[in-house]
Length: 377
Image (cartoon, rainbow, N blue to C red; front, side, top):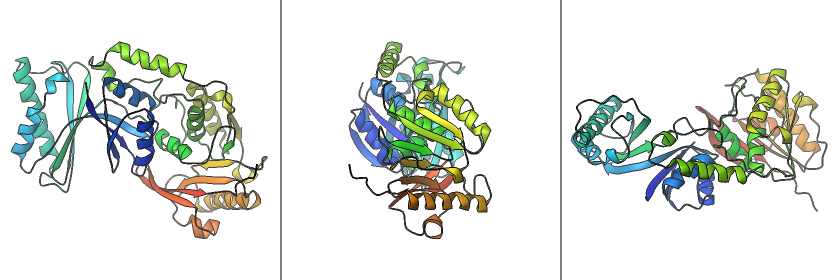
């Protein structure tokens, strides 16, 4: 079955998600704000959910059309072959959003869309009432400038929920964003990676999973598994293949520090759950005590910032430590996200080599990249 799939993402990570999809061998149709559309099949749903590190969800595109009146919305929604996906006991729910569209009432759009699906399934199954006792089917109806995109969510709980984060500390970074920070950095196998503000260990754990080629969705389940549309055998095949592709014998050097002893313990537990505790060295340590130890390395970190935790003076001390560290160790590179838009001039005294606007949850942040001098071999 040929399917048009959509991988949603955080704003700013579209290019990263696009590369991941292409890496899986699928053809990109188009890339837009916060979503990548591509062609696939049932196996593509499985592989995408298992392997996409930076996407939020994998959706099946059911239809796209213009709707200026609620009758347009109802009739087109009713014309979709919902019975090919949703069984008589399916627990289907409709979520709507509307931006710059004549049909601006989200509640009305949701009501009309759900009524259309109910009428279609009533006619198909010959019943007057639905128990909705079966698997979950989340239908998303998105209106943008009068253009309606209808999708079915194959993922369920967002892809950032890997399943390994059993212990967490305040204000953790999303796993998908942490993975993107690593992939956008200069860090490569054999080079030292340091996160001096590791919190619950998300950045070093995601880095280790990338290095060991561990599929991020390997130890969790997805909504589409309960549908019965994709054979269970296919899920088993892809999971078995993913397990076989884990690279155990790699030169992975990652160090993670935090001043909070509870954070270090949480990080260790999470790393063990993710299966990467053997390649990360966790240590309780203040940022001010950080030393290079090697001529060259990479710092990837999500330090405290105003909207999160800590006082401004303490945060400024962390930034000043990074500034002095880079001066003393010019071959090191720093990759850091923060909501503070003044760090370049007021703290580091220079502009970053690259920057990218991203979001950590609902907080707008900037991913600053300060590149070190290349070491001559």
